[in-house]
Image 1 (tube, rainbow, N blue to C red):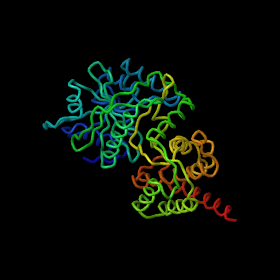
Image 2 (image 1 turned 90 degrees about the vertical axis):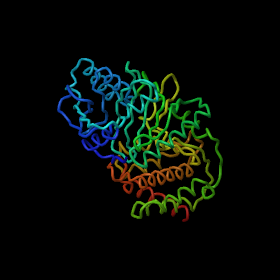
Image 3 (image 1 turned 30 degrees about the vertical axis):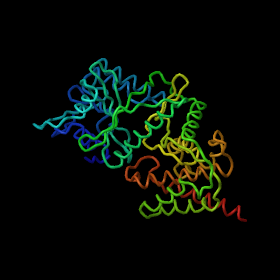
Image 4 (image 1 turned 180 degrees about the horizontal axis):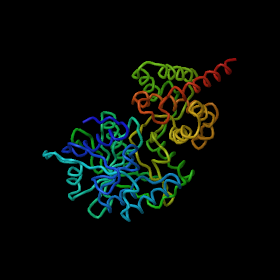
Length: 400
């Protein structure tokens, strides 16, 4: 079954009818005193669907991904207090499911069979993105978190779930020292969707602030965990893969900009060090507890990429939120020597790696259809065109 990653009521309705196939109607009620799920902060802007039971709802809210700011931590505390005291009408909108006479097993039936016990789920929806999918908090009768499950809603998210399962299994075999990851409990097909079930990660009590030294240590281990090698860009598997991807995206100004940028970098053809990367390392995909990084969402994990990509991605996601998009790409290239110094990269090589990262990310966004979601950075041309102009100008100055 394919579910379009839309917005508001339509997305909530499509997700719930995917998870509960016997449902024939989804109704929304102002106030939350009655219903099967509680949409937070509202149905129109839903990021969380909490189960109706007060105990499980409060637990699910506590298990939701850790707040990344002190303000979000405060809002979570207030919402949990409202749930505990029964003031549900203050914190969201109710959702009522109307079931038909069918006997199609729900996602809770499927997950309950895996754990051989009755389970209840909370649903994280997240922001509108091409890879948006329901992420389930799987709880037992006592509201203990027993697993986290990802449910694919289309070909892209099905593929990403399989990629994450392979990544977690591979990394587990490597016994990482500076970071923790989840275990794969199961991956299978249900109701036409791929479902990845993982062990829960304990980030309770993790600090809002992320220690930079711990983050860089973990990023270096990820980069080197499968070994590294040095070769000229043109001889790398990465360059062959990137070139192939430029042929797979639809033609247009964005694709032409990527090709122009890669052409300029390819002329230099500098030797670079290649390794692995997480692929989506952000403040909301990690936590630090007891001096160790805990990292999740490995669905974009890849090998044979220039070392340092994770550091660049971490910084670029922040630049997209805090600076004009026209300045985000060039700002990243300018900051690259500092960001990549922990990976023994500086000067022009660091700038080349940053440009390669931006080209790779642009191709991802174009291939996945990110521009159709309106997500931050989805207008690739706005941040990539200034980078191509900067690289071209620098190349011309070196020739002169």
